[in-house]
Length: 123
Image (cartoon, rainbow, N blue to C red; front, side, top):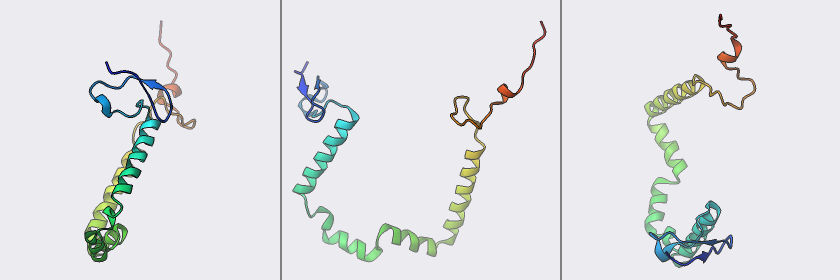
């Protein structure tokens, strides 16, 4: 078993996972992992400052514009896609509205059928 370590973010002691060895940097709590990921990304971007500013990326942006511009242009060129997508979304929303309500629902306006009917069982 690897010796205990202190998490650099929450300062709690933890035993590293043996499968990760010395690569594990945090205790594994979601907040600590998130902070480690953010720190790692910042270090990577500092080492590679021009990665997202390459000539290829500029050519792509000049040719296609932003993603929103591209999708807007695509929708204008393909009205059948827009109709199919709208029909799909309508059907999907209708299916959501017709889904059965869970008995553990937090909605106070929802009443369950079993609660409405009171049937007496003959003895």
